[in-house]
Amino acid sequence: QVQLVESGGGLVQPGGSLTLSCAASGSIFSIDAMGWYRRPPGKQRESVATVVGGGSTNYADSVKGRFTISRDNAKNTVYLQMNSLEPEDTAVYYCSAVVITTDRVLRGYWGQGTQVTVSS
Image 1 (cartoon, rainbow, N blue to C red):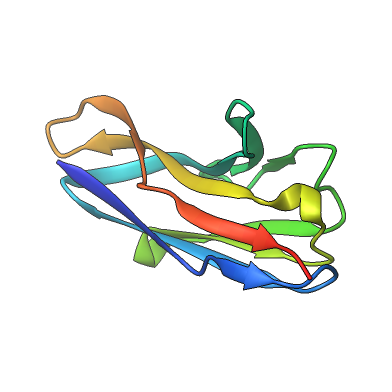
Image 2 (image 1 turned 135 degrees about the vertical axis):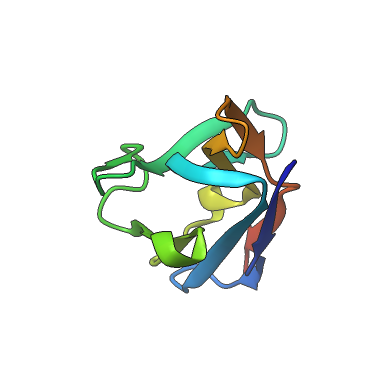
């Protein structure tokens, strides 16, 4: 099995910054893509940012220029640096990973989610 553990959420004022981290562990042979999704209150889950093994990144239009995704392949960890936070960024943030397990099966995994609240 593979586990994704997120950290770094919390309460921040508008204009502030937070960094989320997500560490993958378990039966990992390699990790293909990693990403962050979020579910705002009363809305569906949406993609925020993704990074593939080669380092290419993709961002939702709403976060471009404010959020930065990065990964440390040696630590199987992905980060989301969030700057200039807005109340509309309030959501539960989920980490995801597409993993090739040690039995050479490709599977997707989700973290448990971490709350980010942007409010004065």
